[in-house]
Image (cartoon, rainbow, N blue to C red; front, side):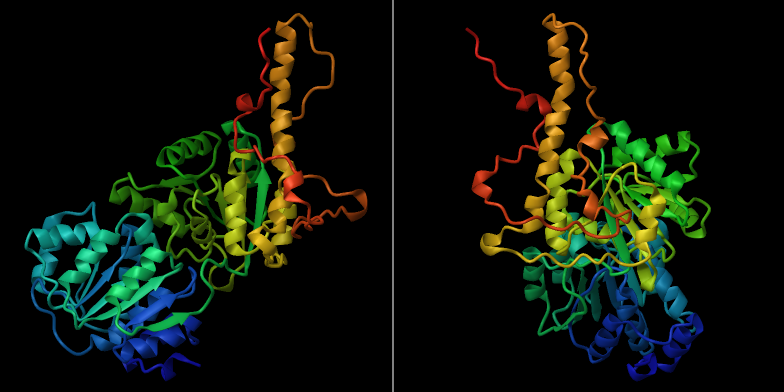
Length: 495
């Protein structure tokens, strides 16, 4: 099916043809007719499937008739971050170039005066983040009673950022007769409650099951030790040895870690930028523009860059920190492998990240292949030429899963290895002299996965590890990999 069969206006079809697109994506093919029919829409699709154009194109067709009034926008699009809001505005500028529409952007970090001036002239499309939108309504400079179409984009990200109460307030300010379009990648219970409250008989469009990863992204995890410098050393080695790396986003969990890693990579001669929520808007925009233009091949970012940013040629994603929430992993690696392109996602995993990795594998329904930290990145990229062939894991009776049990030996062995240096120091203090036994292995090797037998060893790491035969959980010792080593020392009773 082509765009000409979806009911779009001639002006919009001409704009789409000028960009070179001929065939709509599944979410666009299914959503656009319902939007043009004035129905509420609940769209569930993973990142990178063309959700933005699924509501931008029909909105441009519907807005060809009518005129905006001062301080009363005709349509409203709510986005969780400034970058996403600016990106949606770019889509309107691109596809609506032949139409005389007023598009305004209400985001933080920009002067209130300039925004008030645009609102006074009348706005056809208002794109805003929740906080700045409510600021303008409380000041009396914005009325939402004329909104005919409301779009809530990246709703699950709104939930993560604590914007759901703001979304509820905004929905109550808009007329009950509005049309509502609701787009999300996952459907947690809180999001389901919102949809039941504010959507009326919506057309549910689900082009992929929730929390799935793109098929073109090859995923790997590399085990390292507990020390922070080991993660940085491993990351630098992977970046230097990569042959097909065009550009990469490196994700950290905290803003402070973003700043530290950014300075470390700069010190070692890498061309790198940084992006996190505490930066002012001009610095954030400049970093993104430099990354998009290829002026800087590396971008160290927090999860502010994990949702919806469209940078098509991103070849690699590195999880310097494994995300605490499994859903964030899906969105992070969705920055690569977009529009059918191949991509590579590599997670640097410490012993404390084992539980998070188990939760991620359970969510995406597949085992992420493991690689030794000493493996050259060329082998990783050779396996990344084809998508991972790991099959979804089948839950066993009682809800336990095989691969989770298969990963238990590695963390437990790693804890035992981590305790060796402490025992040696205690031996020297007690008069045992210099330790003459074999030296302990490095932490990175200590936490590496078990080595396969020689008969089944293979130089490629693109294949998922085979699960061992099921074992009785009651006969296994408890998994203490999440505990620090000093809590695992044997207790000596005083006589």
